[in-house]
Length: 169
Image (cartoon, rainbow, N blue to C red):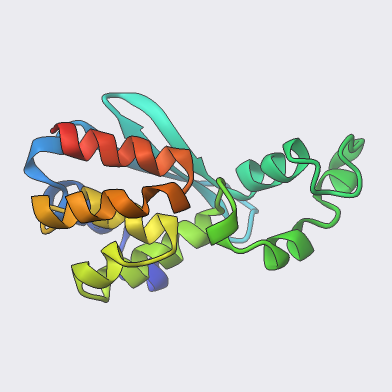
């Protein structure tokens, strides 16, 4: 995570919440990261809005999504091995632009791309995670945000909630 998002989590969090977040949303949007021992760096990213959990990003949320959408061969797994069977192939087969749930790695990769490109490129991204960071960004002006509304239909519903939050603030 640190290499892709360039910096410690506390520095990245400060960047997102204090430096880049729209002033009207400061104190309302909070990011969290939890890492688990013995999980090879895997963890969980979370976004809270007004102190309520809004969205989680982890392998677990994606695998549960695959099961819920009946995308796995075995949608009633028994045990850990069956639960994770086929996960990696589905993850490779179904890109982020066609899902509503994302891994912690996809969150970190999107954050790295967002941080290393102009805000206009992030607002124009097809990746909903990159677009999310751009919508919350203080550099996104009213006109750019209004133009983004035309593209909302192509994104998951959760991104529409982010858009409404930003426009109402």
